[in-house]
Length: 559
Image: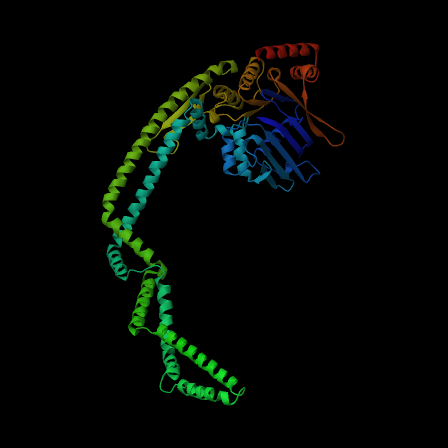
């Protein structure tokens, strides 16, 4: 339910905090006191249309916050969890906030996290319904009527079965359409497809092959260029003209003479030894390089031919060389679809037909249950109409079923129809009923639905306009009855309605040079005085006070 509403700098409201409880709360006050401002503010917090003119004169922006206490199993939490808007879990409650700039810009928040106005509106619709003579927006769309009948009849599980059957049929139909498209495309290109598959099968491209071939080819080409120089260098050290034997002979002679000249030849002998060691190392490295550079010229030719063949195929099929293997698989699959497509096509067509049969059976059962629920709902609404002085009127659920126009919700279109007087043509409730009649039809419908298919907070904006006496009393009785299931807020001019409230808010204007709208809770004698004012007008008489006391006593007794 709506726990509190905080309004700052909206039209005539500078700062206002209102705390609500459960049951029936009424808001009353003289014409022009600002009742519409409260509803506009609540609507703004629920994602309603913003307007820079709503901001109080002299302020840069206005702001409205609505705090809700909702049971943790309410479906609104599923939506919020999907959007990660419940960091503290379901137990933390819900705060909807909207700021309105005087430049027309607005910002929306849920639990102090910025959201789009669309998100705020979607959440707001699940928490609050605002109804007046021309505010039954939820009643305009026949899809909403279907949802209400489903909720009234407890058909959520049946709707879930139809939805699951529809999705299964739709998904299989999609796969069938894709297969048909592939087969049609493959059949149109059959000759090209078979030639391409044969060519790529022979070519047998492998992933990573291009890079490997290019690297090996580069290595062999480089080796070819330096092979002669490597061999010449190796022959210089190891061939007939090698200086190594001469150097070894010279070092041996010096070694034999070393003892005859102590300290004179040791450095030279050591240098000779280092030089011979370095030459031996160079010879070994050259020999290793020669082994690595050895290749078969035919191998280079084969690598080049393979590389050129792959790149030619890449250009032909307009795919990278790395994608040729995958492309070959796709073409092979298309050819397989073409060769074996008729069998698979017949199999899928059978599946689609079977799933369609399951869907139609589930939708047919749901349709029958909807018809029964609609008739039951109509009976309950009709029982509420006579006390509301609509005893000559009829209410019924117009249901049209078309198995050829199946949706995830079934095959039914449901709409609330009324006949206001005998002999008149029945029609859609929103089109046929006048403003006052529409309000009463709506109230009867809401009472029949009770807490099924309803938001946890219902707001009725002067639905008692233009009625009085017994009709107003009947409206008050039904609002009180409805308030036993959900929270009800009613803006009213009818004392019969006000007398049945569990809480009463008085709206007034006051202040000095700057007029402000004020709201405060009234009770006991002050409440009796307000109801007396509603009965008698500007001058409250003792008779009006006595009548107010009787209304309050009767209302308390009825409650």
